[in-house]
Length: 109
Image (cartoon, rainbow, N blue to C red; front, side):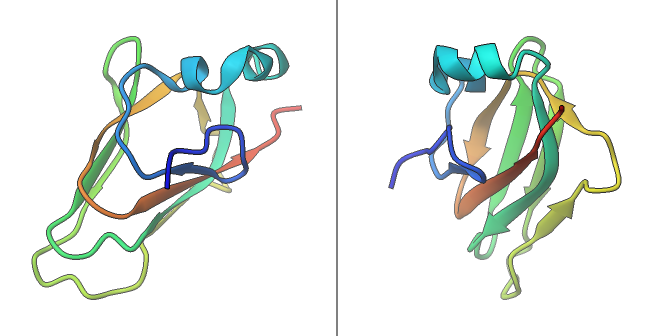
């Protein structure tokens, strides 16, 4: 499987450091100039001793990160931002040791 940048949810299974906007095509940049409203992130099938990090491309600010303990045998971790106004302008995923990130986007309009 490969990263899917233009679906909802955005599906990330491979690290990338070039920035979301470069990978999502010019069409995305024109229709979403304010960035992405993030409603939730689900980390599917991370397994034990896994980690991920999502960062802002311009300054490496950590937007979201997670890790699982060596004894992890649980459900998929869910990071719910529905009650918040979270906007990611241009993110990258430099660390994803296992599993698949499903990033759910809400409209900013």
